[in-house]
Length: 178
Image 1 (tube, rainbow, N blue to C red):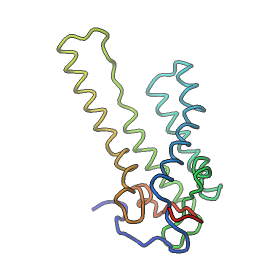
Image 2 (cartoon, rainbow, N blue to C red):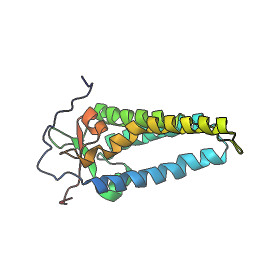
Image 3 (cartoon, rainbow, N blue to C red):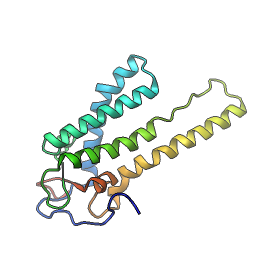
């Protein structure tokens, strides 16, 4: 039995659900912003790959949680895409706990996929090529939950990700028909 409810609670009808591509636009903008602010400087400083992944996830957690809680349920990318996160039951602003749960699960899925790194050989032997192939498959398998979460709204009737279901939230786009 899953920890978070998978029931299809109806989204509030007062505001339309955000379409998938509006959500993707907000996510891409946030990803670019965070990459410029966090990932590029860490890479320029030759930060350890694992430490950089942890720092990236921690900053993403703080960024997402604070903005979802104190900025009308919107990250900067969501603000540009004109979408916001709301409580699934009544469509009002989410609570601190909902913001924490939503961002924590998203960051956990991201961290799982980002912590597994492997080195590639410059001139690999056949044995090393096989090992690289196995490592690539493991890395891909660890990213599956993250991408499954991002793709979930494509077939969900309320356009919810797994993180939305876990936190009991929906993403709305007022004044739009998706």
